Image (cartoon, rainbow, N blue to C red; front, top):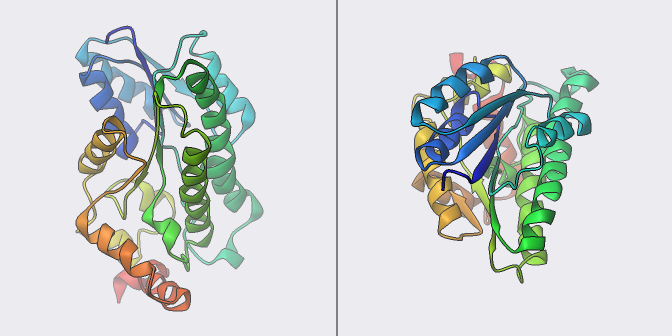
Length: 261
């Protein structure tokens, strides 16, 4: 196992950090990436498990940034890909400048599917490899006051479902979508949602638990996994609750200042 390679995006904190830790514990060499210097400190943590670890500081909202990451492999075969990087966009959409919401779209959608396309093409050609893409139950909910993020996750959830069908004859390849609910990470502060009800909720999922759910589902060959019983129930409810009501419910969680009421 020591010569197998796992590539983890968004690995400096949160779910990505925990996924990289799980891979390192299983003896995978790692290439970990984030668009911040903290990725180097994270890589130092992963090295304690005795595998080869390389950190890359790259902007995955750009094609060039994804190419920079892939170039770092030096042509090595990627056995595991955890496409986990994502950016939130809290607050009223009309108050957001174009650069803000476009960065979220380009990171969560463009960078993610370009990376998946590049890696998955090789996996299908050799009929071997595993990919876990971090979607979200947010993709099932019209996300008032986090509208762009929820929209991007709706794309990811839908895209990966379609892609699984396209590659269904590649029996040696697994493509799994991890769909958590709110997770106790830096996401909400980075998205400017620290004063919201959901941002201040003390009952968010533990990122390690979410990462374990994703890891187990990936190696069980599952197409997707909703992490957490409460989130499973919420996804089931979206099939019967009108979208306008879902949007209003989301507003109560995500509207700026809602955590202070």
